[in-house]
Image (cartoon, rainbow, N blue to C red; front, side, top):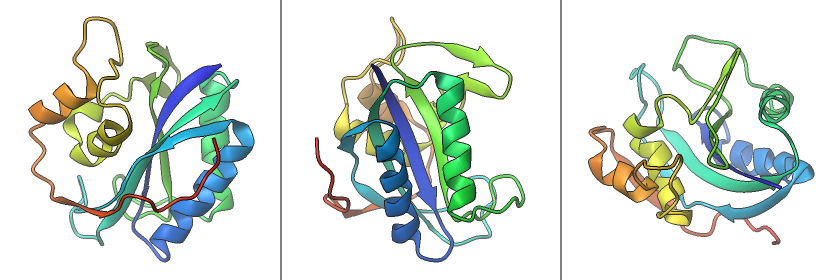
Length: 167
């Protein structure tokens, strides 16, 4: 089984509904081991847009990295995500951040996510569920990355138990 950390974000429409439905879909492809706290965060990159809701999930799955990426893209499509500008508004965003402790570089997929260490809204929800996780041997833990993160984007915890799931 593979242990995968996936970041979730939404800043259009029913943000909480999109995140919840995304996790419901994900649970069909493995076991949701942990779900991070829910945060409200300022936009990153393109700033002229609504605040995001962000969280993270630890998914245990048999899927390989590219197969999982394809599933995530299909879930986004099913939930109504539309192509817009880079870093712009979106109904749902699902990103593979870590896949076990593997380095993956194939067309269209880099794991660990190439910018994870610069994004407080990605690091904080993962640190809530796995602060001591080391993405690759001889790298910092998630908590150490968070402590060293220079991202000044403001995030605020909204809820510690926003999604009910079974382990």
